[in-house]
Amino acid sequence: MIQISTKSVEETQRLGAELARIVCAGDLILLCGDLGAGKTSFTQGFGEALGVVSPITSPTFTLANCYEGDLTINHLDVYRLTHIEETRDLGLHELVDDQSVTLIEWGDVIIGALPSGYIEIRFNLGETSDEREIHIQISGSEWEDRLEVIKGIKERLC
Ligand code: ADP
Ligand code: MG
Image (cartoon, rainbow, N blue to C red; front, side, top):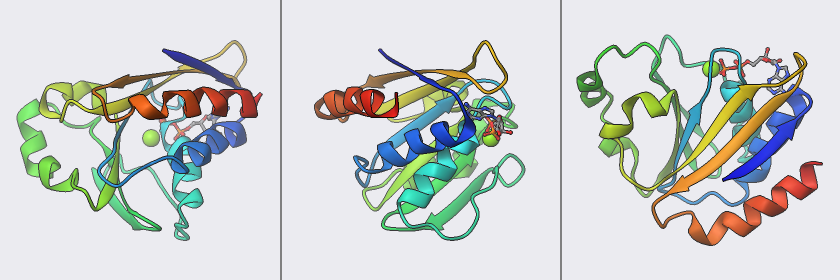
């Protein structure tokens, strides 16, 4: 597991931007942690780095937003799903294709319905209101080759 601390919302956005540089079509990114932890902020930096010009906002009520950048970005928030069966309606398996990258806020809640290869980014509140402790881990082989690069991101952010 890789641990990264950020000291401001901008730094969390920068982390998103750095990760966007190594993302590939077909990737799945799970964003976990409580409300206000920084999941949407991360996605804003991520999308901006991929050339998304429209504002990236929380998909809490729309469930899924789609942005066009260098890649198609699917941004989901499954917080309001009460049953894992509802994920069927999201058409997840069609979304996670080799044309786009998919980020799912609260993705851990529907883990059983997801493909096995993903990166999980968990946001925890830090000691002060502007600090976050971020834990990154991977599942499956898709991200293995990129782990060292992610460790390098940590060095650059500090
Ligand atoms: P979530 O999507 O997890 O509910 P948001 O990204 O919408 O969270 O909100 C995070 C809030 O916390 C924003 O208001 C942001 O300005 C604030 N914040 C303060 N410090 C940080 C930090 N280090 N990283 C991310 N957000 C931070
Ligand atoms: Mg959010």
